[in-house]
Length: 148
Image (cartoon, rainbow, N blue to C red; front, side, top):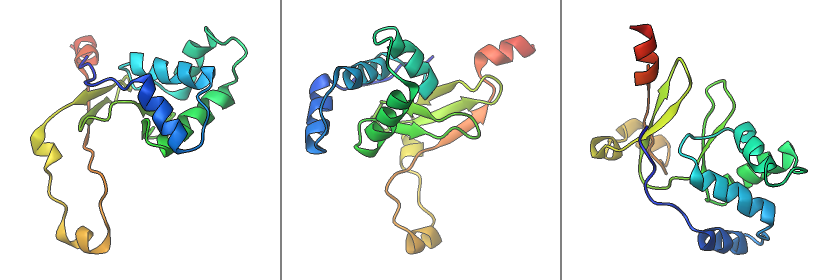
């Protein structure tokens, strides 16, 4: 598993919440900290089960809405679920993803050639591209070992 790069701090959480007139509740802080400790691009359900150990009465809805809010205010990004539940990523370093088609593991990878990919001229005329992410799909090493 390729580990994440920089970790965001609670000060970053406080600043972003203040910027968007949100309170830093203990539940929000726990969700944020759980995301920072994970390197597996967890789903809302996984985060919910982890945070529930600290806050037994927290609801799934609270966790899900918090994750979506974090995405909207720039604390995390959503890694689309491709028909599966949405997954969340707190790594803001420029990076890309590999997704295993068998076990749905999502791994980060870094490659400057993907960072510098050219936008097709036709698309550049029609749209303003704000972000470039490459997602490669295939079979991960663990699943490949099981096949062989």
